[in-house]
Amino acid sequence: MAERYTLNRAGEGPNYDWENDHTFVKVSSEQSGGAYTLMEDNLKASFALGLHRHDTHAETFYVLEGDIDFYVDGDWHRCGAGATLHVPPGVPHASRVVDGAPARMLMIFQPAGFDQFLAELSTMSEADFADEAKMAALNAKYDIVQMGPVPAHPDEAE
Picture 1 (cartoon, rainbow, N blue to C red):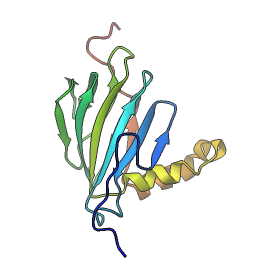
Picture 2 (tube, rainbow, N blue to C red):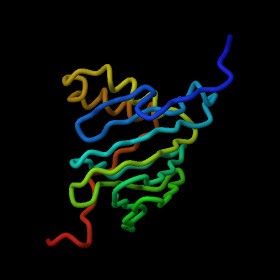
Picture 3 (spheres, rainbow, N blue to C red):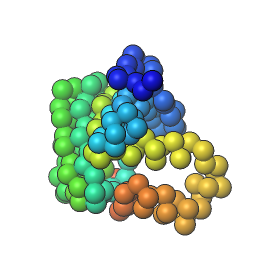
């Protein structure tokens, strides 16, 4: 019998504990019929995500706890609990935690697929991560166009 609904309580759902964050899939690609993926991202004190864009999917971020600096299309925005940021396809963006303090947010990827990207990453070895061609192919498969490191923040001394 097919599931008519799903329930993931706190700390439940497929999860990926990386060096810089611990992500929980709350609604998977499969569960949404490919419409979207909903994830809870627990950002660790070292979290920073370099400049990138997605050509065919949008991302929406809802900050639950802590402060996160988002760089979006040339502008910096400090977002705290309750802030929502929507990034349409084609818009370059990057993010980092503020002052090395952990943060937590919900992320919606539309259409779905980011959970599948993380599942593939979780099966890779260090040699796979070091293989530039393999990483480029994986990024292309999941509509991730790497554009560089997190840009310098205007509050940082040069």
